[in-house]
Amino acid sequence: MSEGYLTTHVLDTAKGCPAAGLRITLFRLEGETRTQLAQMVTNDDGRTDSPILPKGQMNTGTYELVFEAGAYLDASGAPAESPRFLDVVPIRFGISDDQAHYHVPLLISPFGMSTYRGS
Image 1 (cartoon, rainbow, N blue to C red):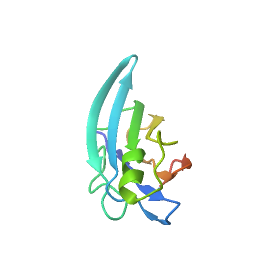
Image 2 (image 1 turned 60 degrees about the vertical axis):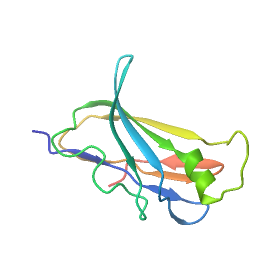
Image 3 (image 1 turned 90 degrees about the horizontal axis):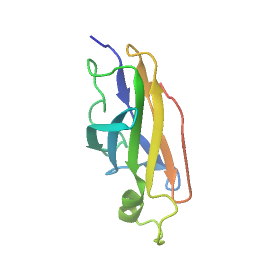
């Protein structure tokens, strides 16, 4: 059984706070096939209440986290624009060790974003 797991969190760098209420969807990619594995919404700390991919469910391969940043920015009162510069933000990444903890956070503002492999 895999001991690895996947977590994420989202920080609103324009406001300097966690991004609460942001919907995140996790997909596994195999060739042209894209399979949804999970969908969660961030809590008041900008994190999901549980790992987005828990122990025992992680395999090596290619994954994609899709962050619905535009809907979050609209709800948070960020100045509206149509279309939003950043709306749906996909982050495609590989898992090479199914026994490890992968943490893939998103730092978001209306006009910029970044990510990294965290701990």
